[in-house]
Length: 449
Image (cartoon, rainbow, N blue to C red; front, side, top):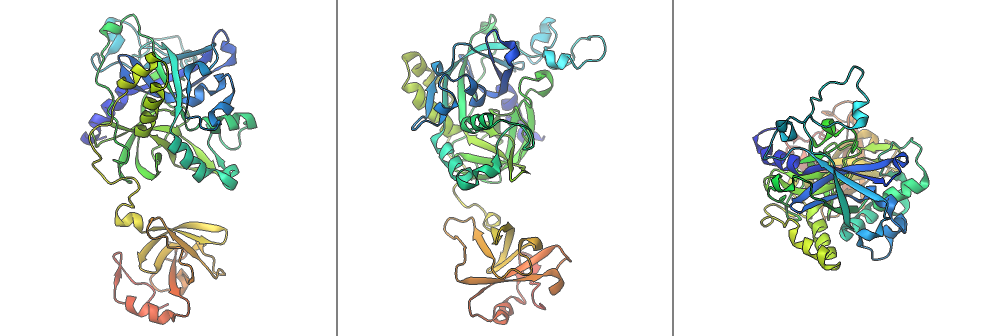
């Protein structure tokens, strides 16, 4: 992946893990699993997605949406909850347990796929699953508020945030539980193993300050697709993308994340290998169409919420607050609320009745977009800008659409030129100043319309 990703890759593989939850003595009831991030190895603190423990809540998943609920103590779950954490070899011993003559581990599900006689596993050596206990369930209130504002309301039924495809049979109760747990995460404490003294403790994961990563920055996502299924193949799978957008601590990335990567860490190359966020929802659909963006929760505000929650619990839990990784340095880039570079400000939303799409503002009052966004019979088109100080809804301004076959210099059937003109202003007087001016490196194409 290049030299610049070396620190991020090392941090991702050293802190990535898989977490599974099951009921004691009820293997037939199935199990739940997701990805996680090792915050500290001594003591073992792991942060993962809260959806895997939501089925064990004594009061049901409704406790996650109770008024003012920002966290729930570990005893909120039933006593039959059993948690296990598994990770790869530590950096101090790259070969891990195989150096001592022990074979790599493979889950029964993966081993069952073998057609021939069992052979010596050739996968990566893994640490055996370690039992863990739930310290608390926590959420980032700002993340939940932005999620409710962006994806709630009247259009909520058009969105699906689940591991199953929209056509799969999912009960209403299961779907409601998934939505309630979407913004919740679980802080676990791993019980020390027999060889805890010999294990590499390693530095705590570095956390990027909130707002330090500008939109468009490259990101590296690390998670285990399909959770605990065959971790010797899927554990700590890497995927690259960029920070596509942000609304407070709710982040979007185009890095491909599959079901089971919930709770996995997302890292940046600057600060080197710093944890930026955790995966909240790897897949989503809107109006039965797949949306190729992953929802993330910023790590810094989530850990702040964890410190506040631990401080209000018993003394033993409060002592863990000091062991959570701090934010590194000061913000080095643009804050997330900044509109960013000019190319970001040029992207606009184009609405025409019930049809909408994206466009590019190539000059004042001139937008280019796909022709199907504004049909020929449309009389009014609404354009919105993402800049907070320049909400270009253009009231009292009408826009006239010119299709490619009406203009010289446009690709046939591909693009549509939208010319915004003030009411009562002659179109020719608006076009005349643009005839000889370059627009984003392109000569004005409307001169002979």
